[in-house]
Length: 369
Image 1: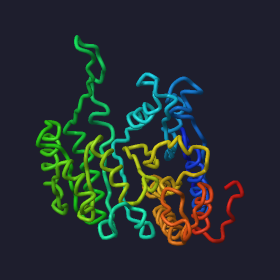
Image 2: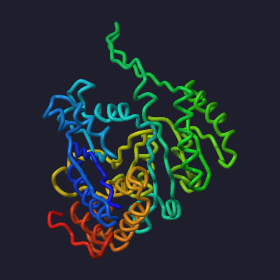
Image 3: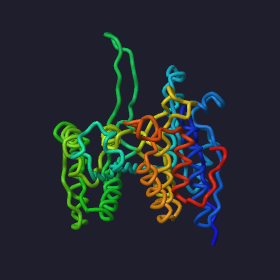
Image 4: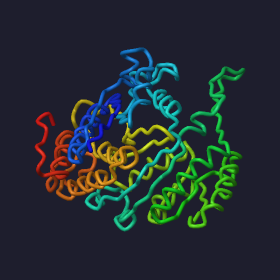
């Protein structure tokens, strides 16, 4: 039975429109292959929304996201909006979407692609066969705590950001981590700064209480500075890492070097009712409009969308296998190329076409690619 999959597309800024366009073509092909109908519509967000509507996130865009089966986001940001007030900067759209859609759990898989081992700055024996899932709490912590301000003082200015976590927030994200680990190898590493921060002491105590209900889970606690070191020293020791908002943001970007490029990292932001998928990389304004961007993180995010939102786990595996096959056959964008004389260095749309062809050799590539 054919089912219509309704996707709100937020191309955003910089390279966002290029990578989302490629990702939607892959999603269209896989939906057709599985007998489903895809319905997509683009909406402005971030700097593009500021230029058009004077604010980074409009009610129209938010309503469209709430009414969709899933959201695909490109990227937001750029130096031309740096002088905007903090609530009018492009990044405010991300915080607004996460809060209004209730997207409290951010999943960031860190997977070694065998053909890209040489792209990593780390030694081959360190990165070989790494498969980590970072579960980042997304709607609490220092990004949302109040007060947040810059105020004048007698000696100059004072900047304040507040780090807050509640028992409920920690229990919720840890439950997601436990469920994720139960479907993998059953090991969870909870990362905090409990030797210094009261919020982390609450975090660690709550995690310890929560795991009592999950005897099948192997739990360890690790300080964030040690975790940062261990990720580059011995990443193979990790299965699922669960941590707070800021720590998760930093650690996942560091872990991108295991894969060779941040252009390879997808993500899924999940809530009870809504979900948003996006590549971890930023808007990369220096290469925007040049078709140099790596679309594989977006394509892998589409695979996550199929798995978590569209009830198409088989399609998710097919997309991921097509990415592996494309890399194995030597296709590279500039960020993951190490030997152009032996590789096929291609543009953003050409990489999308290569994945599309390996996804289904009988499909006719879209001429617009």
